[in-house]
Image (cartoon, rainbow, N blue to C red):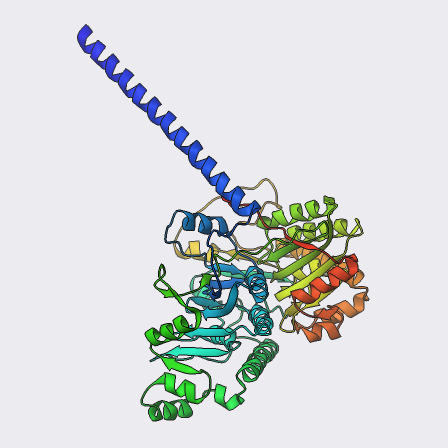
Length: 549
């Protein structure tokens, strides 16, 4: 018996020692990896060394995924580490418009960059205002007399728009260009919700609310149809006008009709690519090996890559411009909710920092939570108390609570394609009482107060609806008063403007909802003028929610 107990005791000691060893070993490995990681991040961020030395080469712009106002998850450091340890890593699928444009502009004056190659095969698309901003930077690059080449198997509408700024467009054999007019696909859920026995209770002020019409309606209202058609036709005209100018062709060459497409397709030996060349949409149609040979002849051969010389845009670093005078840029992108709390903290930091002389607040949002938007708005007002200018730069859409925040700015810049919509406040309550009755589910629940949060499984009572409606009415009038005060307009004028669902760019300016029509560069120029500074450094105040940041 003693021998057996001694054996068990020894076995437990051995297991304990092994567990203790593994724990210490794992902890030490973790500390070593953490030290290496911090060292790499410190070197990469502070010294901004380009580890990929190069001679005169073209800048290869091969965007993977979408181009957005900002990257939702910043994977710059991950990409750097993957290159450092020689791993095959794909760049994140959301790319910052401002990072891309800054690199193109730097490449213009970089003696080591002798051209640009656009390989947009994996580019998913972007909003019209961001496409135009990239096009503007490529046009600026062309003034350096460095060539811009574009290569692809096929071109989507967004890919071709950017490629139209190229000196030469290459299309692979059997390839085609997909240019289709802008369109809006909408779904209406009234019958679907009715089928599921879901009651859709809407509490609102006005009858026409574009944001919520898809749920209660079977189809779109006449007013909404007119406004949407007006907007997409406006976008299409701008799109076509720029391609016509870049390619020096007529509209008929770009637009497709079914009859002409079939006729042209048959005429050109059943090759879409030949049809595109005859329409002067592309310059050369070759198989990829031949395109590769042309680029090798132009830019030289790289033995390591077994391809033409180039530096990938992800490997091309922006040289940090140092200055005592700094301009902060904060981007509000997407739906306003609790996860936008970091913006409030960034505004507070920008106010406290003496080296920050002004703030550009970039807004691209359809609206959101009234509480968090009010907190952002109040923080911007506090920032203005420091006598630093606040300039608002609008993206593709600024609606409802987004516009209320924008109204605080000293000056507001809207892009010609920006959709501007004044305050729209509503509340939606879904109830499933009919559904559980149909499923023969019984349920009892007792409340100590009438004001307890609405029960999803009971009928939405009229008294509760009245209470919510009174709250919405108060918020609605209060917000209109705040906008009127910020924009120095009468309440009557704001109420009149609010009746129309949306305004497009210049309409917003004509109705004094914005001050100027322009892009981010125009907002920056105004900020520099108001700050009375010559040398400056832009500080991008991003969300620090990612471990490797």
